[in-house]
Length: 287
Image 1 (spheres, rainbow, N blue to C red):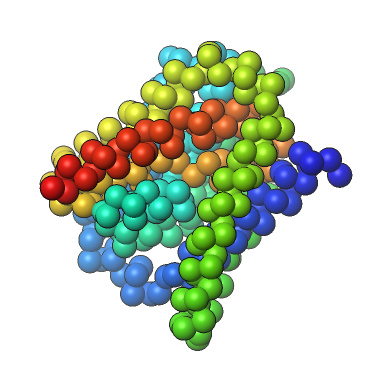
Image 2: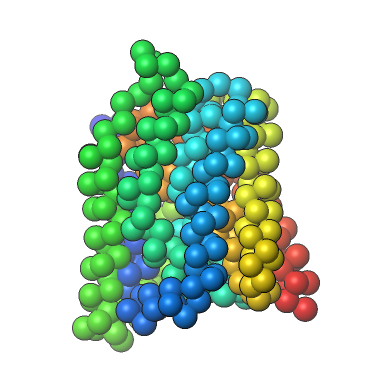
């Protein structure tokens, strides 16, 4: 087995499942009741993440993408919102971490079904029938459930019976998995280095536009619904920061097409810069 094959078929799925397990260990049923406590904030966040963000990606990809693989890859990236990355930035910004984690938990279940749908739409729109990669929808739903929903559920059940041990495990997993995910993204970029360099100039503007406009959209939605400042900051990260590791899982592991992963790998270069810059903006917003 080559390094690339190991990365796509073993390392990324196991790392992502471990992240989801850690999230489950940090959740209780009380946490999920925030859907009732903060219905406006949760509803606004899910609207931005699951509907408006993919629509924005379709518009930008149609206008700016240099080729069908970059365009379809942008849709698949937008179909993978939030995740541990947005949770981490929300925590660093001293925003509403509870809202961030709640949104991530809910979308992890919903995207099991929406990701195959958007993948099929993207490949149907940007590829002709003869060249479009197959979308094994049933297999994708099954594998996404195995990697996301099942680990979250197992983590929540374990925490219900062993809360003290779960709390210790969460801290360990939180530190380890972030570094592992960064390492895997770097390795994926290395495995596709020639394609990334070749498309950086042509697709860089699309990736930057998607990143900045999605962050602005999160802020605009939060302001339009009159959410508090901490929840405004949270929605900037929840809508504007995508789950790169999940996007790589979809493109590299489930669809087995490295060209579709180029947009996500370019995004991995751009997003940390804008996300860190917004930390400074967030501190002024809180003040």
